[in-house]
Image: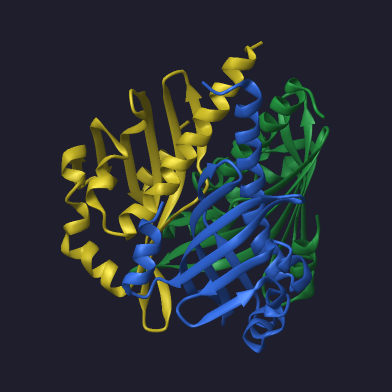
Length: 150
Length: 150
Length: 150
C-alpha cells in the first residue's frame, strides 16, 4: 500500500502531465516556437512518422515552417484527445490522438489524424517530453503498433 | 510545501472544473437552457467572438436560437478538448478547443472550431464560469492571442 | 467531511476510469478484440443505438467485423471526448462523445458521431464497464436523452 504522500504525488504527476499535453495545441496554434520547445526535455526528441526527426532545439523552428504558417493564416486547431497516462516513478508514457483541423471554405476539415506516444521524464523544472512519436492513421501498421503499445 | 489538505483540495478543484467543462456539451446538445445557464456564475458572461455577449440569464435562451434548433434537429455535438487548467485560490483559468460537429448527408462536418478561455470562480454552490471567451479559429489574430494567454 | 483516505480513493477512482475510457480508442484502433472485451465487466453489455447489443464475450469479435476491418485498412481513429464522471461508491457513470474519423482521399472525415453513457462498476480487477450505451447524434431524441442523463 502506498503512503498518502506517494498517492498524492502520483495524482499530481498525472495532473501535471495532462496539463503539459493540453498546453501543446494552444502553444502550437498561437505560433510560439519557444514555448513549444519547452514542452520537451533538453535532450528530447520529436519523431514524425518515418520521415522526420527533430531535437528539442529544432522544435523551436517548427512553427516557422511554411506549412505551419499556412495553417495559422487559414485558421487551425491542433486538437488532442484525452491521454491514457501510465506513470512509473520518474518516467511516464501517454498515448492519445491528435487532429489538425484547418479552415477550408465555410468548414474545418481534418488535414491530419495521428496516433501519438509521448514518453515523459521528471526533470528539475517538472515533467517534460523525452520522446514524442507521431504516426498518421493512414492504414499503415506503424500507427496501429504505436497505439497497441503500453 | 502545501499541506495534505491543500493538495487534496487542489486536485478536487481540478476534477470539479474538468467535470463542469465536460458537462457543457451534453447540456447544450440536449437543449437544456436552464442547466446551461447554471454552468455560469450569476454574474457570469459569455463572449462569442467580437460580435455577441450574453449575461448568464441570457444564456438560458441560447438553446432556443433558430441556429441551435437546426443543429439539434440535424444532429450535433459540441465536443470540447481536454482543458489546460490553472488554479489560483478561488479563481481558475481553463484553455481549450471546442468543435461543433453537425450531420450533413452521411457524415458529420465541423461547422465551428473555436479557441476558448474559461475564467472560473469558486462560489457557494461550487466552481462556476465567470467569463467564457470564444473565438473562431478562422485565421484572425484574436483566437491565437486567446490561446497564447495563461 | 470525507476522510483523507476516502478523498484519495475518489480521485484515484476518477483517474482509473478516465484511463479506462482513454484506452478504448487505442485498443479498438489497433484491432485487439481481446483487450477490447477486457474493458467490460464479465457480465457487461454494449448497446449500439436501437439495433445492436453485444455481451462482453461478443465484444471480442467486434474488431473482426468487415466494417471495422475497412476502417483499419483505410486508417481510422475512435476519438473520445473528456468524460463527465460521477462516482457513487462502487459504481460510476461517465458521459461523453465518440467520433470515428476515417481517411477518405487526403482528409479524415467523421463517419460517426455518437453520444455515450458508460456505466461502470468496481470489480476485483479494477473498474470495468457494466453497460455502454451509444447513440448516433443524427437528430433523433434518443441521443439527446442519453446526453441529458446524469
